[in-house]
Length: 255
Ligand SMILES: NC(=O)c1ccc[n+]([C@@H]2O[C@H](COP(=O)([O-])OP(=O)(O)OC[C@H]3O[C@@H](n4cnc5c(N)ncnc54)[C@H](O)[C@@H]3O)[C@@H](O)[C@H]2O)c1
Image (cartoon, rainbow, N blue to C red):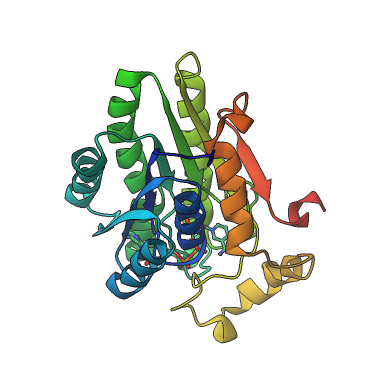
C-alpha cells in the first residue's frame, strides 16, 4: 500500500526545488496532487513528469500574494478531488539579504505577503475543510532562517520566524482534533531560490556578518531529502508530532 493513497494534496510553489520534489514523491505515493505556482513553464514540466510516471496531478497558476488566487486554489482542490487532506505551504521567496537599515518597503511587503500572509490565508481556508472532517495535515516550509538570526536578510528572517509561530499556534490550538500542523526548517538546499539575487555583489555587511556562518555549513542538501522529511510529516508515522519544527540542515545549526 502506498503511503498517501488517494490523499488530496495541495502543494504551493510546486514548479521548482523542494515543492517539485515533494509533488513528485507524494504522487509516487498515491497522492492526488494539486500543484500551484506562478511559473507556468516549470509547472507544465512538473505536470508532464507526474503524468508520465502514472501519477494524478492538476496544475494551476496561483500567486500566494493574491487572496483571490488562494481562494481559487483551495476551491479547485474541492472541485477536482472532493476535499483537501494535506496542505504543503512551500512557496517562498528570498530577500536581498538587507539588514533593517537598508530594507525597503517593497521587499518587506513582498516577502511577508508570499512567505507568511499567503500561507496563513491558505491555512485558514484549509482548516475549514479539515475541521469538518476532523482530519488533516498542514506542513509549512520554514527555514533555519526562521530559528536563527544570521541566515538571510531582515525580511526573510522575520517572515520565517512568523511562519514558525503560526505553525506552533495552529498545532497547539487544534491539538485535540485530528489535524496536525508542523514546519520543516531546511538549511542550505540546492534549488532555484537564489535566481535573481546577485550573490557575487552582496553588500559588505552581508559578507562580514552572514558569510562567515556559511563556512560552517557541512553540505548543501537536495530537494529530495526535504521531500522525504515532508512525507514523514504527512503520514501517521509522525502521529505524535504536532506544532513543532523539524530541522533538516545536515547539522549546520547544531554548531
Ligand atoms: N533553498 C534553500 O536553501 C532554502 C532553505 C530554507 C528554506 N527554503 C524555503 O523552501 C521553500 C521552497 O524554496 P526552494 O528553495 O525550493 O526555491 P525555488 O525557487 O526553487 O522554488 C520556489 C517556488 O515558489 C514559486 N513562487 C515564488 N513566488 C510565488 C508566489 N507568489 N506564489 C506561488 N509560488 C511562488 C517559484 O516560482 C518557485 O517555483 C521556500 O519557502 C523557501 O523559503 C529554502
